Image (cartoon, rainbow, N blue to C red; front, side, top):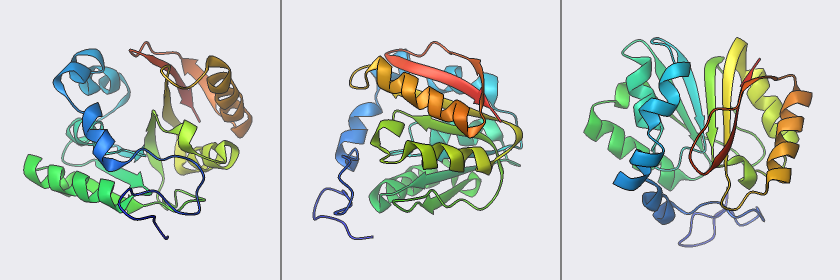
Length: 193
């Protein structure tokens, strides 16, 4: 995949991907107060599970997911940007969680994960995907029967109508709505295969 210089943006993708430098603004003390990963994810994750974190940025949720799945579990961090994956690797090694995290370089037109997963997280990133229909169908296919998918989008710059359209696309892919978890500054939907 070709990239434009200095900003981790794929040259042939008109969508604006969040650059790596900006992701550090998403990982701070204030965010942990408002969007605590442990509090958000713990109700849905079981020890030993395989979890897919799509568009994980610098690993704000990836590392907590690795703690939740335990020694026998695995987190697959799938991102388009090599710089994001490199940062996750560095942080995972520093936290002693690198054995639980598999880094996966996604392609522009597909995630490309080959193993079935128990849970998928797409947090504040689906609005960056040019083909939501294909993207959500691929997540549906990647989940084990009964698997869960937590879809979260930012109220800050995703209109409610756009989120509702994404929810309809997810339902068309076969997902069943379970709940609408309350997450600060977010629209969210927990779905099940």
